[in-house]
Image (cartoon, rainbow, N blue to C red; front, side):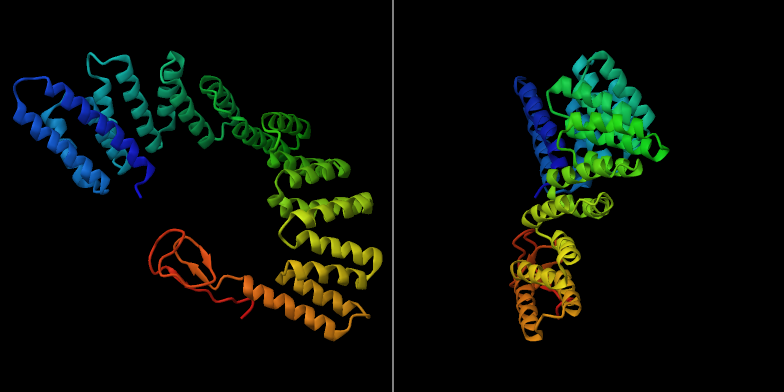
Length: 390
């Protein structure tokens, strides 16, 4: 499949071919030249489609030499040079285009944008920033320039500038930028937290949550800040909210949350939350945490009973290890019953584990395929040794 960046090269190149043929087609003379150049264009496009960049560059250089007025060819060449890492050539080419007399505003803007992208690729962020900022001031190509500026400010970790330009981009295009802005505000909050300015950190987190009401990062960071400030109740609220916003982040929230539960001595709230997470989360972490609480409140036998039932439905190696540990501490468990449970868990683990994995994309399969169903590569799926269960 062709990489997305090739479209950026092919679209203007195809447009150039159409423009060239239309312009030349109206001339009564020079038909042979039109035929030669059109054939050359499509030969260059064919090289691009087959990802033969060297040959494509040779062809477009020939076209540029024959018809120096065709700007589209220059832009195509500049893109090819930049993608190949020949940034110096791309910069010189785009600078020469900008210096041409008689360019329209649209053509000059496009050339300046291309030169700015060259500077970014070369790591000359200050030069790129100057070009894009000038375009924004003039109101020319503002959305593209604003997006590039956001990339530059992220690279420079100038988060406030990134926020300002993200808001301007949102206003110019209507594209929601709240999730990105929330990340920038969290970066500023993290910076303030490290410096010990918890008040400023909370201000940034408030703005992050306003920009993205479902920002799990803001909730996790709020939990850290409240813990640092000795506010266990506030930390509990933040960490619980983070887990409900994105259940996949439960492993990040659970350890500090459990510690805060212990310090506040609120077993009912802790148990209720863990029960909710056991139902929603596919992993074993909340079940193990709940088993430990049951053991503390009701004893090892009760905890063993809960964990046995849970692992029958959701087998886990970590859970199996915890079950054995509980059984060793419980006096009422019959060894034969425990062994039957362990056997059942192991059988389910073996059945559910993939026996093969693609070396290319990581696709897991229970049966062998010579062609990977995911990435379509051949002979990349190989048997997987199960260290944990073999």
